[in-house]
Length: 239
Image 1: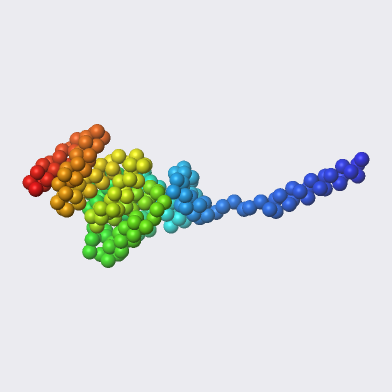
Image 2 (image 1 turned 90 degrees about the vertical axis):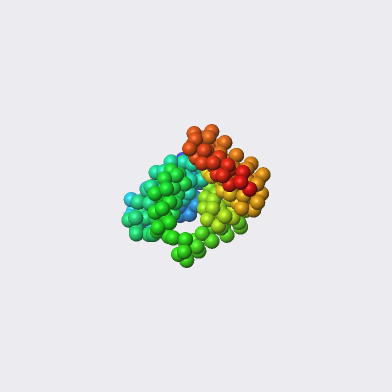
């Protein structure tokens, strides 16, 4: 009986050792980021945990990547500014002009504070080749990527606005509506209205502008709603 018990104990110990040997090692912080970044519906809590771990280990490059993902999500869904502000802090510490420009532009979209917009443009003016290349790459991504995500919504919006690209803005509009980013929806309606006006499509432009102004009004943005209505009065009624 004692020998049988000993034999059983040895077998159990061997099984436990085999289990330990086959257990995969825990993911590194970088691996965790890559796994989250590959998921369009990543958990912001998990991504913030990655950013915190990267900060603790002094890996500002990885922290920046995680914060940019979070910042893009905030812009796409009309969230708060904390992730973009953290992203800007890291960009300033690293003296990275392109990241600073992205952070300032994202904060402009979130706050509508033109000081952020002016800062972004000063960092990467329109005639700087890198800026054009950066936006061109985003436009290409917007038009070619089929899997919906919040970062893609931002890419389509930014590149569509810069190049007055109707297809990119329509894609951004669809994505913003999907993610409930109502302020971005209103902005995109207005941009599409301007494109329609430039094409001489007055009725379409009026409808899009009306959608923009009504939504802005419902969102409590009375001044911006008046500005859109004034544009409609000045530009479209004169055509």
